[in-house]
Image (cartoon, rainbow, N blue to C red; front, top):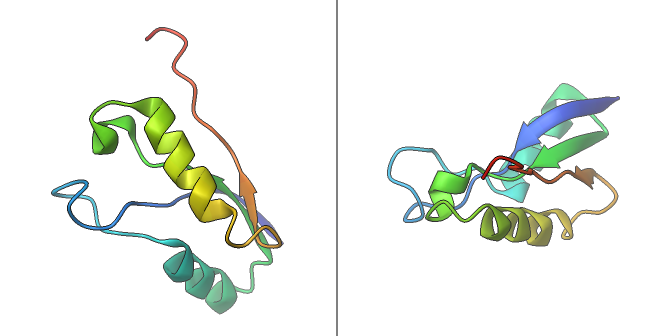
Amino acid sequence: IIANHAHLMPPPGKTSWWPAGDADQLLRHLDFCGIERVVVFPPFANQFDNDLAAANRWALDEVRSHPDRFLPAGILAPAA
């Protein structure tokens, strides 16, 4: 089973109202649900001072910790 959409969220301090959601937390959820792999999207740009590239880089670093489980996806903002 491959889930088609999940977000990783940075630790508290990067944002004041989104709960943290790191790679380990996501893996626990995947295991509980019997999901083998997931497409992972970065957090929202406003969590990185509206720096979409920084959000993408942060998520890619997280995804690299489990290449057998996480499939990276980036976010583009062509109108920005």
